[in-house]
Image (cartoon, rainbow, N blue to C red; front, side, top):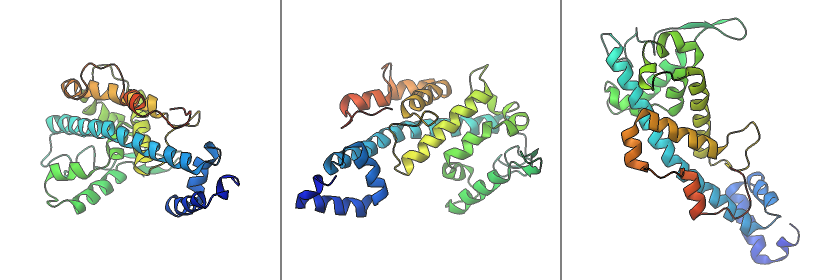
Length: 246
């Protein structure tokens, strides 16, 4: 690190890079790159490019998921209003469950807040299509939580997936996809995940498989029969500046 800063150009680059990224963020890249500022910045840009590639898959999957769930609920829910707005909807009505602390809580309270927020941002808050478009991936991912199995999964959402889909396994997969989406959205480091962390390569492969299960025609139209995942194709075209794990 000290040797790299002996050159004025390197010192200037280090100064603006720290102001831009913050010293703590930049240092995590510098440590991996032996103090080489240029290499650290290359690695940071490579990480952002990887995130952009992943965000394409996430966007494809999120559209398929929310529209599949909307269809499953719309076709089966018998209420006076759209399932987003009806007080008797399994997505909005109070569903009381005991927390780990053995206290009763309404697991749908967070749903009602999310819907209210989305309605507040919508140009036409009475238009369910606009509200659905404004709901975050986490809203849809948590629909398969165990607390909603009896009220939401069994009567409605199971129909969006192939017969025999394991709700618990699916829920874990959706949680991982949502975590990856948040890491990408916040420009966090995607490579070298902790052993218990979010492997982008594994999550991307799972996400594409789930997309194919939800919408095989759309998957075929977008990805064809190519056996490689988006990350594998990305690495073919954009090898990492240093050896990393995905």
